[in-house]
Image (tube, rainbow over all chains, first blue to last red; front, side):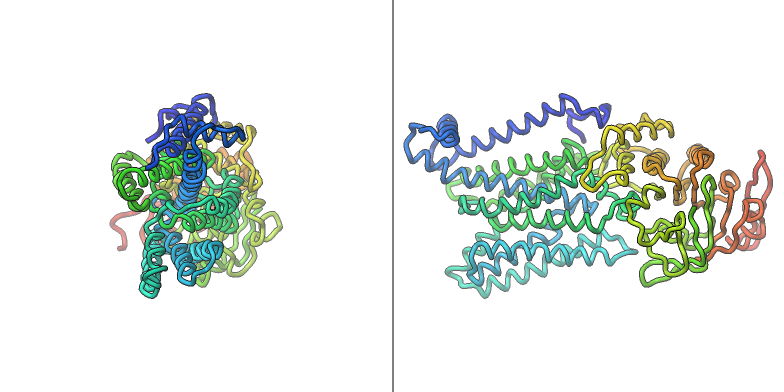
Length: 351
Length: 257
């Protein structure tokens, strides 16, 4: 399953204008989604007003619109939309990295226990009433620890199917961490802490502030750096470990760098948004179907798609019903059926 | 030149074979035969430095293989694994391009020169037409050729092939054997394993017979591949004859069980 932009006949190194047209279209689509997300909501704002406010704020001029409109667009919706972009892009990109590194198109931050580990870390933080920065730090440590344990178990199985063991270990790890989370929920203060924990576990961008955005951006950018630098080497990392080493790659070092980067991004995302499932699994598949498996194209494609998809879902979450629908519920309700359709309609390989 | 002396090998904590002594020179085709599970693949992984030797000496051009950085080793020795299905649908061009990894720094991407090397390698093997096909959508024989191309793109002095003719049809087997002869004629050292003694007659300069982790016999095909040696190696009766200028081996179906 490949996009019309990359027909089978075109030489892979040909590049050319048609690819560029696709990328420009993708950026434009993302811009449209962002502007629509700024305009749509309980407080009615037209697209033109949203444009005006953005233009005025970015150039420092006065928009001449009511201050309420400015506040809603600039102070309320913009931080939330940008957080959505960052979280969606981070989850999608790290999903693409995990799938490549584990040579398994079915792994995702959820299955490997990163999300559960990061959740447990963050919930510990909430439970002990720690400051936001500590909650995020614990979330990162929890995610990294969960992946490390799952990965160590997977590499023990030299003579069995390591991929199967990896996925099963991830499921067991997720269950164990889930039990710990449940324990903390039982022990938590039912008036102050429990609602925070529950809301957090359902996943939401409702309470995101500019401060949240600023606190996760460094981690996400830091995680992106090794991925961008290693974007060609990442292709070689999708080979069997011994094959990659025979090709001259020090796989242990490279894998560690990439897993740390992907886990850093996932944990940062989870620390502000809570659990938002399916993006890390679904978006890399769609991106691969559009641009192929070459990571130097897959990375930006997953980034754009993941960011755009989450902003669109979040806009739906806050505008579709009278109450806000938790985001994790919506991404699962949309993502799971779409993924099933993708599985059935993919003719060969994990396109 | 690759030299192993009294080499013991295996997986961490489990030694599979010992006492292996062999020497492969440039332009030589070295063929390993032995029953399933005798340790051929494990020996290859050790020769490639992917597994640590459990004892003895293993040197490439006078330097110990263990401890040689992967990148440096991969510039001299390439590996052609058995063609397995890939997870992701990379094009054959991209798969062969991965052979250039050892020529590039960690953060480097392939240059126009690397792409030119890939194109040359593809045409050397006569598989330019596969360049933009997906590696997951081509036949087993084509995959094997793509993996050989990837190994050649490393520009190595030695190439190690694990059962390169396994599960290929009659015609594709011959294509691979021709390629092996052509590489050796160009000065490449080739180490391969096979389950078809006739292939050893067809392409090997040296044949080693392996059994239960040890090499039981090394010699020219004519010396090593006799009804007696093959009979005891595989536990069957074998007739060896000459046909079309080289040796052929035929198992007897009604011999001892």
